[in-house]
Length: 484
Ligand SMILES: Cc1ncc(COP(=O)(O)O)c(C=O)c1O
Image (cartoon, rainbow, N blue to C red; front, side):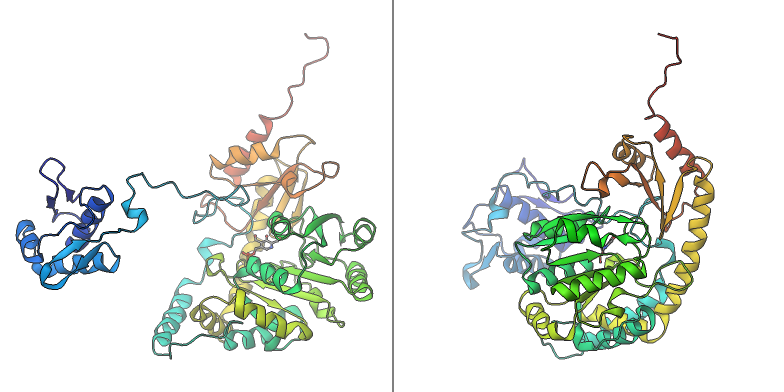
C-alpha cells in the first residue's frame, strides 16, 4: 500500500510499482489520507512537482496529474510561482480525523441490495436467462449515439420513442388503448407510485390495499400520509364489498389485478366490474399495479384492468423489473387523458424520468421484437421451473398452492415462518414468510411463498428437503399420552 511513512517526518510518501493501482492514484490517495489525518496541515506548502517526482522516482507529469486532481477536489491550491499549497479549508469529510461512519442502513423494509438472487426468492427474474448479448449491443449503440446528440434537457416524461413503443405493446399485450401523451416513464413501480401520490394529492386520505399484499406499497402510502386500509382478498381477488364497508371514503384502491401479489389469482370479471363501478359512481381512483405485465403463465394473460376503463378512473403502472431486469429501474404510468398534463407538469418539476439512453435502448428492444420473444422464452422457462419446483416440494409440503410465478406452502398456524425464512438464508434460500404480507392478526396465515424463477444448478430437490428440515425443527414436540 502506498502512503505516508509515519516514522519519517511529516511528509514522506512512497509508491509501490507492484500495486495494481496506478501511480497517480497512489499519490492522490496518499496525500488525501495525509490531509484527512492532519499530517499535512491546512495552508502548508507542497513540494514542487519536480521535487516530489524525483523523490518518488516517477515522471513529473504523474505528480502533476495527481496535484491537478487534488486541486479539482479542493484539497490543493496552485498559486502560480508561489507554489502549491494545502487548501486552508479542506472539505469537512476529509478534514475530520474521525473514522467514516458506516453507510446508514435502510430500515428493514428492504435488504440485500446488489446480491445475487437466492433459491425461492420472489420478485427477481431468472439471472441466467437475461438476453445479455442482444441487450448490450443495443445499449452500447444508444450510449454511443447519445454522445453525438445536442446536450440539452430530455423530455421529463421519458423518451417519445419508448412511449410510442409502449402504446403498441400495451395494445397488443395488455389490451390498453392509449396515446403516448398518457404515458410517463418512471423509475420503476416505486417511482410511478411516488409520482401518482404527488400528482393526485392523496395526502390525508384513505386507500384500499390488498390483504395479503405487497408490503412496500403499504409502507409507501404510510410514508406520504395516506392511511392504507387492508381489504381481504379471496379466490376472486380483492373483496370490493368489504372495501365499501371498511373504508367508504377511500380515495383510491391499489390492486394487483393481473396476478394478485402474493397469492397469484387474477381479479375475476365480476370483481373488476364491481371495482370499476365503485370508482366511477363515487369519483374514486383505481391504481393498477401490473407488476408482472404479460408474464402470466396461463395461455393468455388476463388483460389489464385499465383495458376496461371507459370512465378514465384507472391509473395503470407497469414495470420492466420482472420482465427484463430490476437493474434498469424502469417503469411507466399510463394515466387517463384528462390527467396527462398534470402528470407531465409534476414529472417536469419533481420527478423527471431517468436516463434517456436506457429508454431508447428499450424502445429498440421492443421495436425489433426482442422483448416479446424474450417474454415468450421466459414464460416457457418459468413454467418448466415451476413444475420442477412443485415436483420437488410436493413430497415435503403436500399442501401447496400455485400463485403466479410462485407457490405458497401453508404452515400450521403460529409456526414461525419469519424465523424459518431467516434461517433459510444461511442455506442459500430466500423464502418469503406469508404472515408478513398480512396486516391484521385475525387474518394472518402462516406459510412460505416460494419463487420459481431462479433454479439451483442441481435442481430444487436438495433445497426442498432442507426447507422441510427447517420447518420440522419448529414443530411443537408432541409428548405421547401417559408419559411425563
Ligand atoms: C407486487 C409488486 N409490485 C411492484 C413491485 C416493484 O416493482 P419495481 O421494481 O418496478 O419497483 C414488485 C416487486 O417485487 C411487486 O412484487
